[in-house]
Amino acid sequence: MNSNPASTANPIVPGGPGEGAPAAAAPATSPTFSPLYQQIKGLITQSLESGEWKPGEIIPSEVELAARFKVSQGTVRKAIDELAADNLLVRRQGKGTFVATHNEDRAQFRFLRLLADDGAEHPHVSRLLECRRLRASADIARQLDLKPADPVVLIKRLLQFDGEITVLDEIWLPGMVFRGLTLERLSEYKGPLYAMFETEFGTRMIRATEKIRAVAADPTVADLLQVPAGFPLLSVERVSYTYGDRPVEVRRGWYVTTGYYYQNDLS
Amino acid sequence: MNSNPASTANPIVPGGPGEGAPAAAAPATSPTFSPLYQQIKGLITQSLESGEWKPGEIIPSEVELAARFKVSQGTVRKAIDELAADNLLVRRQGKGTFVATHNEDRAQFRFLRLLADDGAEHPHVSRLLECRRLRASADIARQLDLKPADPVVLIKRLLQFDGEITVLDEIWLPGMVFRGLTLERLSEYKGPLYAMFETEFGTRMIRATEKIRAVAADPTVADLLQVPAGFPLLSVERVSYTYGDRPVEVRRGWYVTTGYYYQNDLS
DNA sequence: AAGTGGTCTAGACCACTCT
DNA sequence: GAGTGGTCTAGACCACTTT
Image 1 (cartoon, each protein chain N blue to C red):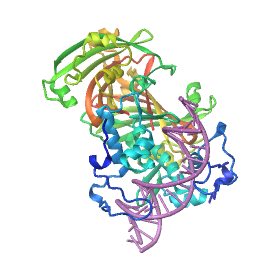
Image 2 (image 1 turned 60 degrees about the vertical axis):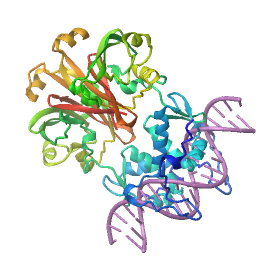
Image 3 (image 1 turned 90 degrees about the horizontal axis):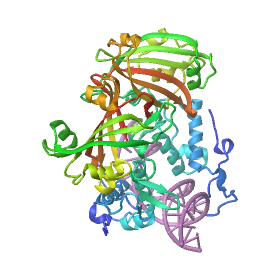
Image 4 (image 1 turned 180 degrees about the vertical axis):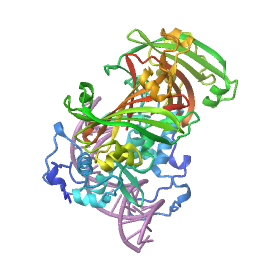
């Protein structure tokens, strides 16, 4: 167990207690000022990253964490609030605070926002095409923060919505992290890909950025998606990041958007 | 001036003061329980909607609002925090809290997330094609929450990025709200459309939802965008909402995504 | 009844901006 | 120096869940 007291891991220097004597604490001069709750946030993130608390598990209560870090409950509360806003933690009143997971809930929609034209959310099934290990191209290496020719895993698959072939995905993963990932293991696993990555490889996808374009289907892609060559497709280039903003997935998707659309909210 | 004390506008029933006698307040039984800060949030939103504080202006300080609503500073703080998270207010340390606006900042990008292939954000210029008043189709009426055949304004325009024609927009607005909106007035106004809407018509766009598809350019659209018919375009159908989640704009955009892409962040 | 997160208060002090 | 938002604390009580 990691008994990580705040004082050892970080120069925690609060502004001063809310009452009584301000002690002899340094005045926290501005240059490298970081609020206490940010430091706590960092410590909690470390525990998440190190696997001290795994996805789906409950984390210690606010009072426990306050005691452990030697700060007030309000301070750990603010730290947890931000981590919950970032989708790293999930609060449940009366029960506790839990590590977010791609397994349960339907956090699926967060990373695949395809809806039917009537606005309904349809379930989809995956059809694996291949899973190969190869050396990263310069482009993929750059995006995954690897050296060129480093080992990578390439997965190709189709997604069917209501039986209709709708999405073709090419997924690149760093080979170092995803050792032992084979087509067979992929097919055995039931459930979302990101759920498998987090339970089988300890890599949790936190956030992603996407570049979206309209493109004409090239012959190979058109064939797989069963549309005519030149058919307009939504091209989605995604880079996914885990703790510490480290990129761990490059995904290129082609979506057939007849009958389905990509839902986005600007707020 | 609207002296809106909390007690008149809303049944504010706090759980009880943090110390001393809990007074004779009702125990706030669960069925219709709403936290105090949510009620304060509602009151502040009312003042925003009524125009008591206009976009770009400063709102009263936290202590002033606390006195006005007869609550603690911490409570109005939490209310303001959420309104700032919703992009209705902007906090600036040392200066005050301001009403968000589409005028300054470059909150532009929030509603037009087109980047050049190199990731750079290029400025764009608008070229107005037309501005007509007509009767709403059933479809548009439904989306704008109007009755069929109610008056609407239709604006068509092109956007050029670096001189390249990139976007064609068709914009529908409720005629009642946008009285006196003419092509001439549109051309005179320099700056973002949403900035004009908020300063000239008192209608501020708060959030929007978009349905994104890849489509083949039909001849009319292709001609305007100077691409071949059938060219793959990004189709973006947007509905924008103002205070109270009232829809006030339907926008259909066609984006040429060669050299540019639509940037989206999943978090 | 006990434990968890959620709300509310009051007060002190810090960081930042302007006068 | 005065005023603003930002941080931190301590304590009380509420709402929800489980024992």
